[in-house]
Amino acid sequence: MTRARNGKTVIRGRKRTRKLCKGFRLSRHNLYRQAIVTLIRSRVYAFRDRRVRKREFRRLWIIRINAATRMRGISYSAFIDGLKKAGIELDRKQLSELAIHDPKAFDQLVNEARSART
Image 1 (cartoon, rainbow, N blue to C red):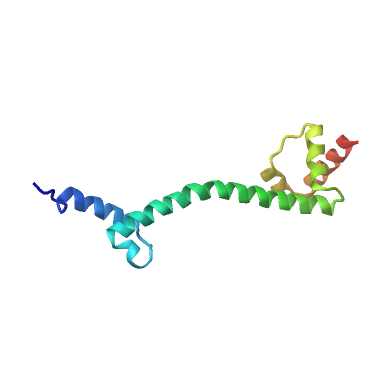
Image 2: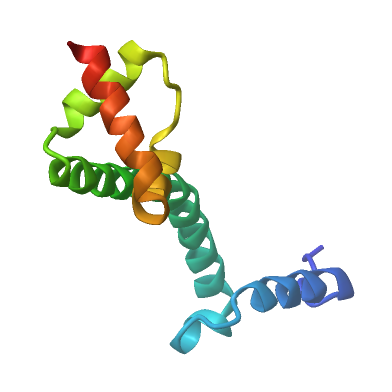
């Protein structure tokens, strides 16, 4: 006996898939087989890029800290080394926020790092 593929359950599943494909271009949002392939690929990209985003933000924070420390006459690596020797445990996100929004506190951190390295 052949299998019916136009029953309530199957149509509901297709409808759910098409709803997930809202915003996809051309036939990818309304042709079921293409929609499934596109959904799989989009989820792969989403999984991968959640990790890529973390990398990119860390790179951005390091660039900001490097620019701020060079303005104060010390390199980024020397600054991080000095902070570790001084026992100051701030992550790069917080350091970049300090460099942008509170330059006086960042100046104090640079001085601490300098004195800990000598």
